[in-house]
Image (cartoon, rainbow, N blue to C red; front, side, top):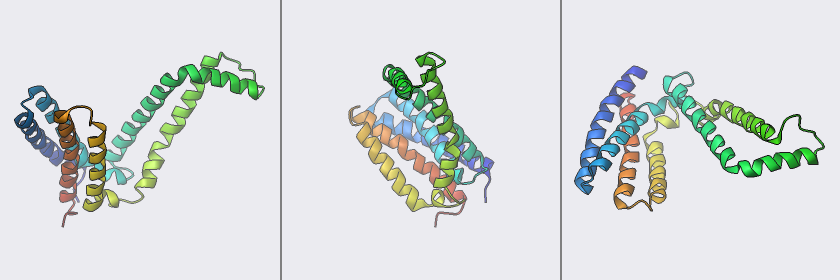
Length: 197
């Protein structure tokens, strides 16, 4: 079976090809050079990601380590964003909780709220790898299945179509095309593994 460098090399070849195809297609459809350029770059990145993604089910693989780092970053950024948006309500909640439980805070409530956010962030980031492990319990499981990946990408494409409905037809169609290139990358990986029959 091919190793990571082989999947990455073919992923790069597929990424370059899909980047050009998507850029030319978007330009031909909408005559929008900036949209075409950006969609070509996005399609290349998405195709490459799809080409290495199936091996996240191998617990010691490079794609797994990259996925864990990326999801941890997303978790940290997500919790930080939620804490920032909810800060005006979080600090008074910490104060009222300390009063309700009869605990005198040794630090200002803002510092206590910050500490709470930090603890939640560390705990959530620490759960990323075990959760991926629960979802991908064995190597060459569902992440190496063409039908399952086809269904998953169809669901994601439907979600992208709905989420981008307010952006205008050119951008909406372009977003769906770019996200669809993930499946092309997945097919590159599965083809190299001999999973396409």
